[in-house]
Amino acid sequence: MHELSIVASLFEILEEKVREQKATKVVLVKLQVGKLAGVVPEFLETAFNTYKEGTLAAEALLEIEDIPPTIKCQKCRTEFTSENFVFLCPSCGSAEIKILAGTELLLEKIELEV
Amino acid sequence: MEKKEIIVQQEILGTNKKIALEIRKKLELRGVLVVNFLSSPGSGKTSLLERIAEMLRPGHSMAVIEGDIETERDAERIRRKGVQAWQITTGGACHLEAKMVGKLLPQIPETTEFLFIENVGNLVCPASYDLGESLRCVLLSAPEGDDKPKKYPKAFSTADCLIITKADLFPVLPFNVEQAKKEALEINPRLRVFITSALKGEGIQEVVQYFLDCRKELIQRHA
Image (cartoon, rainbow over all chains, first blue to last red; front, side):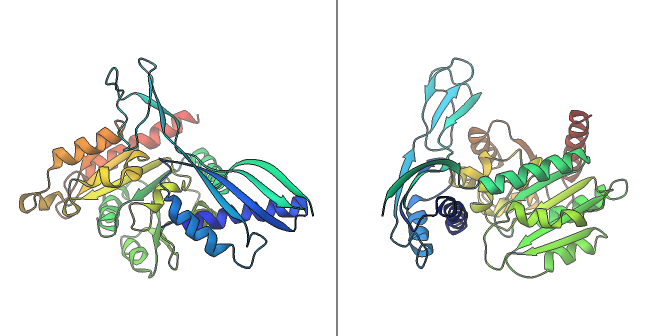
């Protein structure tokens, strides 16, 4: 349940952007959350909706894009996906892999009223 | 009133990562091996640290940062071993963050060779926070069950070593050590696995030797 801490960090970035842009309101916040990020999107949403009260983002909408894992075998170069943290190449069985996507916890974009 | 879209593309925990990178750089250059211990509450992190202190201290200098929600108890246990220890009480937060470690940096003596950080007992949240460690160790105690690696994969997938603790209880528990190792290695084939009993002293020397080797490697890397 560290989603509230994550939302607190998110709001630090939001506050900075609001200041930079001299915005009056945050309308939309879009995140990219990888399936391997160790974060529960539903909890993130609840935490966001609690935290935003009384801030310039009070009416902001939170959009979360789930990013499926993309794993690449370093031996035979096959790309595959896995959501259970077991990363064995389905073609050659190698455990020498590289995670290309799926661990992101990213603030992608925001929409402000200025 | 005008609407404006801004592409940010910024990591939400980017600030934590940045502080962690600074800590790692600073301490590695000083030759300090920082080890972050992750596990459920009660899996034996403090007992393991007590045994490590007994074995490491005669020839080496170590310091400990203890993370807990409340109380100074763990830091007091470590201090009784003659080791400098700082307690961070998070007051409810389920993990340590890099900035908490960063605040203590000025107090870490120049002569320190090993800095052990005992994270808040929790197998989920601490996994998402880099503390600036050079080595991440996850503990799994026999009473927790051999099925934990796949239930809490993030902690196991981000660790460098797995320390199975309370091996003295193997005879009375249905804990299958081979199964636990297999599950953990399927998630993370790079894991070094150790089997220990803080009570009987089993495996502690191997863990200490591993830390000594890792520090040697770290110093060579920065030479």
